[in-house]
Image 1 (spheres, rainbow, N blue to C red):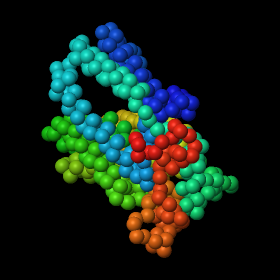
Image 2 (image 1 turned 180 degrees about the vertical axis):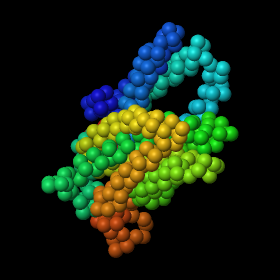
Image 3 (image 1 turned 90 degrees about the vertical axis):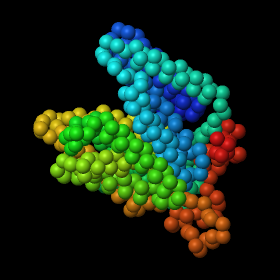
Image 4 (image 1 turned 90 degrees about the horizontal axis):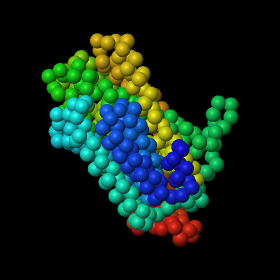
Length: 406
């Protein structure tokens, strides 16, 4: 909320990308002295700076991908790009264990130093590339105008309110608050699974190496995101993807806790990673939809909500500490979190579906009688849907260019 949002709102996507990469490079470079001195505080600060740079990149990168293209494919693009990240999560531990850090101990960090240094130089080079590459921008007034038009096309208003307790709350605000809260809960569940993966998998199948079991889980995690990208590209409403993934993660985590140890329970535990995979990008894109001038604020709030991953593993640790003979009690916390996260897709499948469902362009030969605004198919005048960046590009500012030029 401090660096990423401030830079994005006062400058541009490009500046925010560069700021995040510079922070990342500073953190990677600062690892060298901390490794030479064997300083844990230095290592902690280095990782904090790296995480700050990554968070800054997330604040700008996710909305940029969601906005740069046809709006009805925002969830598809974000799932695909996050799928590339998931492929990295498959390869990087294997590369680290088998090549880079093989035979490493606490007094020999030479290979790690060079790894961090190489990453730092690569990130700096990437920042230079971003400096020279022209990128489209999306000013707040353009985002607001496009959002109002999209809502008008389905018979809604940007100022629409929902009943809440004894008063009313703006629909945009409700979507942002519930989306951010769900994001914190989801990331808490995901990081709890990641943190306790080795002891849980070992308790389920002691004769299998937890490292390779987790590698399989990372692979199905990547597969889940690519599949979500495909089905949303083909036209399945993203709220159904969110509902299916949340429900699947809840069921498989609960079964992994309740069933006796064995291969079937281990398979159920691996499937938790499959179902949780598409929740982050789908939830992110859904929450950004039709936020208008608050799109960048919503993005920063969603990234800040990732701090849930720092809270809930501690709760799960407390549950395991109370039952030291059964590490699977961490999965009880995971199941509860995924169960609570079902509130969001359940709410979206009700009255909010017209607010978050993508308005898909009309197919050739279709008529207004065949597709109406109420089913989220097209606008009343049959106008082709365009991206936030593209639709008002020729009217608002010379800096806003057609989305397909990206």
